Image (cartoon, rainbow, N blue to C red; front, side):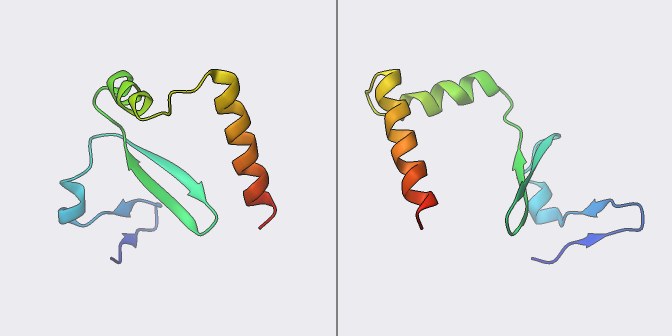
Length: 76
């Protein structure tokens, strides 16, 4: 979907996309551009839900898994 940026740097987001966004969004710079992520109404609840999806591992085991995956990606 194409969006326009005016001379002051304001981004016009089409109505059908604006409906799915909250009042605040996070802008995240990624390799290919910018990602717009809606800010959750309740960030703590959102983190709790994400935490429930984590594997049942200790913190040390999680760290080892993260490092292993990062090394794998770095080798690509």
